Length: 403
Image (cartoon, rainbow, N blue to C red):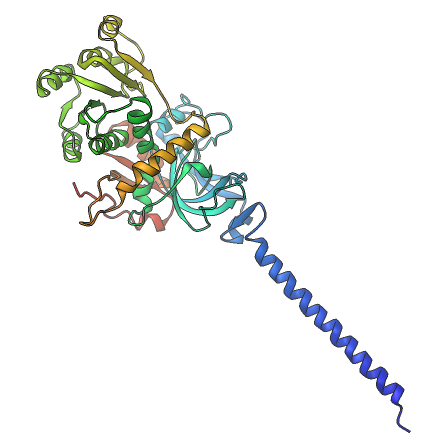
């Protein structure tokens, strides 16, 4: 006799097995989906899970202050971005005078900033904090203003302090922009209040800040003169739009007045200080503005400086950028992005109004040689350190010299 009860039990058991199997499949699919989506949600979003798992990175480091020879590549802790920060895979970074001073123990980083050298970087975003502006995304090419940390494979930075890299620029070219161009923009517009009818004097006209300031003056319609130490630097300044370029020494104030029809200048951007104090006071017109942002020539003052300041009603303002409040830097980056960054894009003829000037491109392992080059005033524009072969491959023809 056929056992219907046994058959029915067998069928029910098969259904249970199938239900359990289906539930297992559904659970596995849900787990995979959850793992996939979690990488794009939560406090951070990552371009590559393996990047997030790494806890160390390569960086240019030093143990004790000293000369360029103390710099070497070592392993250090990889930064963890805060909710308002992005994490950037650094491909190139620019050298600045402040970093040579920090290496010597003379210019410590602001509280809370990375102790690693580097005030600017260009690279790709690998993580974006949940509090960041939605316009930033993983994989985007950006350049950043930093308080420290640029000489490394990764850096974390306030999302308000980054800018998109114009499409036609390489990482090497982009690394030549943030610190010096934002500094020059700050000196001219936020501190010096440059006007179209002004005549401006820029010291160290062959430096990164100097070459940027020349171009920004030209963009704004102001006449600009410069001082610089080498024939090649002065020639570059003239090509960038300077009305005159004069060697360092004791006669540049008189030479500028002679070149300007007997008139002086309305605004001086001074990174030299002490040794140029008397001539600065001499070359400035009445009610002139004098913006001091460095002391390469020392801090001591000689001569009847205060008499000239009083007689001419001169305004002297000292300024720095690195230690400024994050909100100030955010406003500066926003203003520069809106009013200056578009001029790095080529026009219909293929030429750009503003050009990042790159002097030399070196590997991060050559940081010591790069510092020695800067301290010897051998560069004519920005020195760039690259962190990878990807950035080095873009170095050939890195300066777009449509002058």
